[in-house]
Length: 403
Image (cartoon, rainbow, N blue to C red; front, side, top):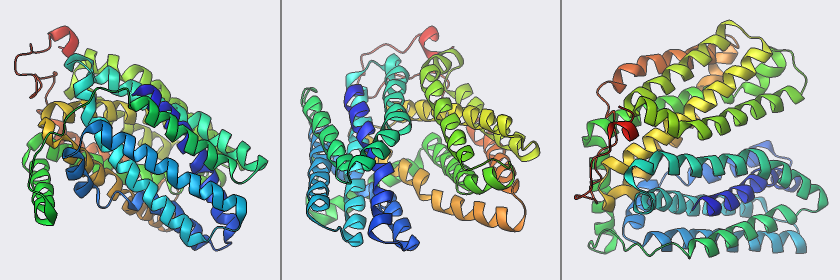
């Protein structure tokens, strides 16, 4: 699982760097370039329906099928770029279909982890997977994609297709996990199953509060990052390379967070780790709002990214413990829809605040919003609980649970 995620993440990073370059080469219309960029994220809109399908399929089949679908799509794009000009509408469609496959893969991957790892090892396993994804998409993939683009337009997409093929071959070695739900077929059954997943998310107090907080996290993060390039050049007075420096600092913070998140969660417990994550994120935003000095901004972005990774590791593990095994795909996809769906709102909010209030306003707003979420984290589970699919297992000890 970890190696497959690392391979496909390298390809994803290469594609994320090369696809906007291809879109810009095909059309000089900024609108269409932005549509191509947004199409992949729009695939998360039907995520609850996809989560229901994932719950009704064998997990290995969902992941291998998603990898092979992305491999085929990128192989077609590679062939088209070799023989002729690519229509921009084809790029929009390809980005959307790759995004749909990504939703299938990610929902199934999080659902299968509890079947592969012991309960007390969930944080460590999720941290390793997240660390592999950060390394691929944040450090190796983008420079590789940019370098391959200079060699020839088809090469970044050909490499991405090969990484998905390699991931699919690796995942064929996973143990077969039977689908968790045998439900009625047809559209009505699909809709009823999806509604059951949404009811679970809305009815469980812990999951409901986590969804609210992650939505605010998405708003705050995008409010800052949507205007970061303007902030770096205008407020901090750095040249064009300053924006890249800030992104590298954030990626390094994410990698540090992935390396330390499991130990932090086991030492502090889930409840305190979540509170620490949100508090650190809020404080980093507020520090930048009052002290716009570029070395400090880089340090705060690194700290913020590490805190976000700690949040992700804890919440993924908590969902895997709280959700019934046959509904984990729906819980994962619905939760992530709350996270991704609010990001456009945050991006728009950041632009309005920066333009009408001042360059520090998005940072201050993000920090204050997160501080307001801290009461929602009270009475969260503070220790790993016994998994629903392991009724005979022992509850985690105080040492492994963080006390």
